Amino acid sequence: MLAILSGILILFSGCYEGHTGADGAMLLQYLEPEALKNLVENPREDIWIIDVRPEGSYKKGHIPTSKNFPSGEIMDRLDEIPKTQYLILACETGGRAQAVANKLEKKGYTRFMNWGATSRYTDIYGVVK
View 1 (cartoon, helix red, strand yellow):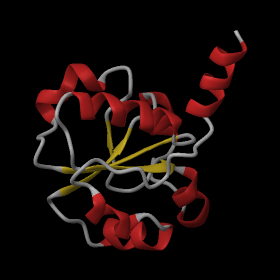
View 2 (view 1 turned 90 degrees about the vertical axis):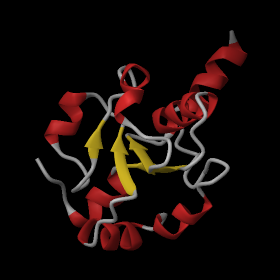
View 3 (view 1 turned 45 degrees about the vertical axis):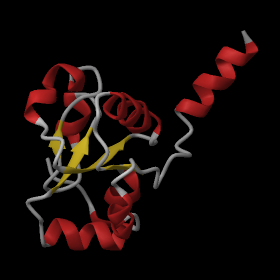
């Protein structure tokens, strides 16, 4: 039981910031909030910011330009996410984004980075509703 609880705590602890897929290292340049803000202000068509929080949380406020693919739906919506797209994944703490990253990796996605908690950005620059 203790091992299960420890695993859950690790999953939601947010210790995965900067974890990338095999072809996602170029996304590390956007790991700091200032760099992500620059991307938000100067979007690139080949990079999507994906918020994996539930739709209600996303609607309350999110990183500008981000797309909402809730973690509970994303595997059913893979046809909307090309494997050629670079993906920056974010959530409440980084744990849910990492769980999604692991699932995407098993499906052959390699161009992703776990950005961690959306609050790393929104606490500094605000949110879009």
